Image 1: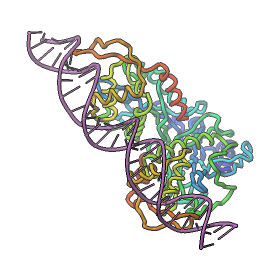
Image 2 (image 1 turned 90 degrees about the vertical axis):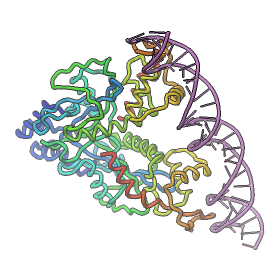
Image 3 (image 1 turned 90 degrees about the horizontal axis):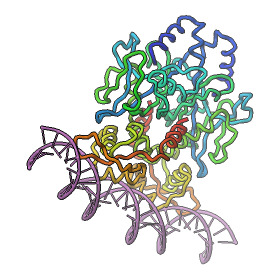
Image 4 (image 1 turned 180 degrees about the horizontal axis):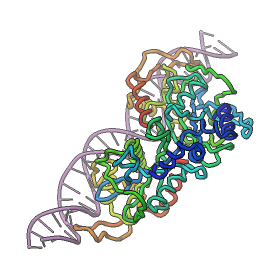
Length: 242
Length: 242
DNA sequence: CAAGCATCGTGTAATTTGTACACAATTCCT
DNA sequence: AGGAATTGTGTACAAATTACACGATGCTTG
């Protein structure tokens, strides 16, 4: 920021009237919360209760508080709105077209989150909240469709190199489940043998010497993410964004 | 954003007093402007004239105006502060730690820009502005060191797949210049034969059938970026970020 | 309880991509 | 004329990617 604009800022703080000139923009965060169920990637949306967006779905978000770090805000939103804590969250980008919010100037920073739908039972407090398949998303409020696209794009890149995808799966999972998940995210079919070879090469998994027991066909082996990669990697990834 | 916080927002707009509660955070943009000279990657910095940061260097930035899109703000900053127009610019991330700005709450969105130092003669208006080598960066104001790191990281990824690096070079350049630039950005040496093979494979360049004429050794062929990739690609890339 | 179904687990050959590495030719400089 | 710096080019080896098929296992159903 320039010295000039900074001086204006200080002046603004002193005189409440001109203050308003320099703090006319509100800032929010929005969370694109991905989940995986029935072989489909899903996103958690809430019914918007803005008059302008009656009946439309929107992301979970809130204004950033003065006394909280930007990157902490989405954690608070998730905790307050879904009861979720300790989740994978990563900043994706900021969206600030003049007219993106119908009732004022609001710039939002988007975060994406990966959670395991079954493990984390949502404590939904207020409005209608639902998991939506990514396929037929329409009638979203604000620019939330675009925000979701950006997050999906980021997710696709990230799963290729970093062990983040496991946040979407239960502790124990089979290679088929993992492959189904990759396929759902990437939107393409993968060759089973080559997929397994590639995953083996990455050395992310520990073989649990256990078998699936709830499938209507020959059960596969169960695996889990190597413990070393678990929290460490999440923290690393989170810090990159800061 | 939730309906609840939104209602607060509307109330705030009506009553100027509580207004202040919801617009206490200012938003700025900061530009990490990369250039290339003497085989080194450089970044354009300005002497900070905040008392708190006396003598330190900082990025070019400014508060976002109420009547401008977030993504337009960095273009304005560049135009106003350096006279540069029509440059490559891409959003990288937002930084919003509570105490990152010593005199108030300011969240900033960082953009990186690539310009050709020789072509674009800077029209420097006010403070001291200088190109700094990325090697001995220290004593930066705010969290600008960290912001530069993030932008560099993004740049490194982006040059591998997308033809953005050419924004740092003159219209006509030799493969040696291109390789020197890749090396400066990546911080590693590359094998010349393999490098040329890889570039050839990407099919980004047109051979100009011209030779260098200002070098103290055997001159190399000159190339330019294929015209198709030039503006198109920039626009594509820019739009991805939005 | 047999037949059918869905999935598991596994390997090889062909192709593409990445890496390491050397030498003669050109131009400038002195 | 000799030295310095750089150009331009190819090959052999290793690693990664892709395409592709079959017998074994456990569950479901009739």
